[in-house]
Length: 213
Image 1 (cartoon, rainbow, N blue to C red):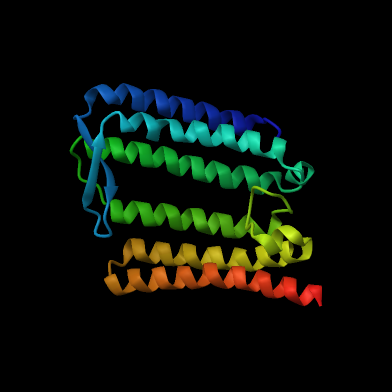
Image 2 (tube, rainbow, N blue to C red):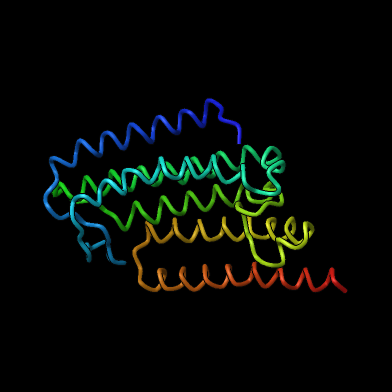
């Protein structure tokens, strides 16, 4: 994967975030929130050293992003979907950075609407992924990888086109769940997301069987 200005900027941002979070470590209480329930209430705590792990995740993701294409047998295809790869990975890294700082903010005793921000961030991420998914070329690390998409490029292409729509729909449901607080909607969203994930994989299987005939 080519290391361009965008990639360098993401790395610098990740490192600066880690430095900032490391400094905040000295101001945190001995235990910090590490998980929230569906109602946005903290239901699990960890030692404050956990913040180093959260702070390091963005840089770790960047390193993984740069490494995986180098060992992919279809590494040449990354040049064909470089924009999708960079934007999706950038979006994931930005969310990890946001999660680190949200945790710091909450650990310092501030009230935060976690059940607003997390579904909203995930919804935006899914819509971004859905938008670029049809442009992802055949590879072994990035995209919808199951036995049937990996075995056939036509199945890969059609599955990723369908998957793009599925991710956008899932993103919309996450967004709705962020603003409309309803247990019924939350349950419906979980069911719809589960059905879409299964449907996309079943679709790829049926396509593969059709092509084999």
